[in-house]
Image (cartoon, rainbow, N blue to C red; front, top):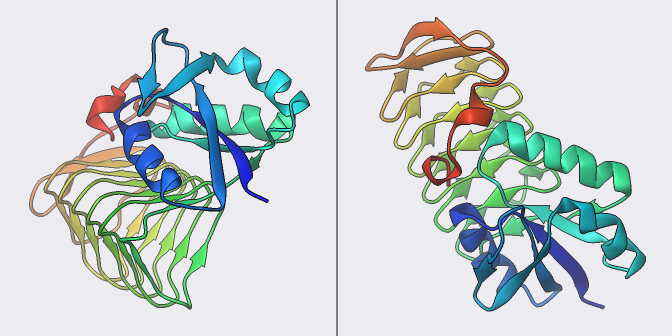
Length: 223
């Protein structure tokens, strides 16, 4: 039986997720949840905001995917959906390359052209965006977002909620602490602690960031 699934979010990131889910014959997309009126992706209309989620459960729609690029907002939406009892599916592009020895969490997005190599681990609700690569033995924390074109060498570890900007790179065995942000095109050659903003070549820490930093980033910069 196909899994009836609601997509939570209807921005640019959700458009890519929709393409992936519609290509999966095991999934039946029933619609979108978003606070914005008039949201419509490929003919699938907005059903309502997240206050509708309990009613969807009563209609036996038990699967969800949080299609929001913003890490902190994705965390909050996933927490609410999980508390209600939704089960999270994965959005794995048929054009992604995933090693048989990789370990994948729940609610993750692997976009077209992404590569997950041997013994890598991808945490719950993480995003490996278009053309990003995660090499062997990496440990990608939950809610991490690797933007398009990121390149992670072997054995890299990211904490929860890390954001790596478009085209950024890391050397092998690098550690990036929870909720840190690495700017576009940066090259990480050493460890970065929790809640820091770093950019440049090589990447340098420029400031500490507060818990709401990611929440204020616009999704169209994160998709």
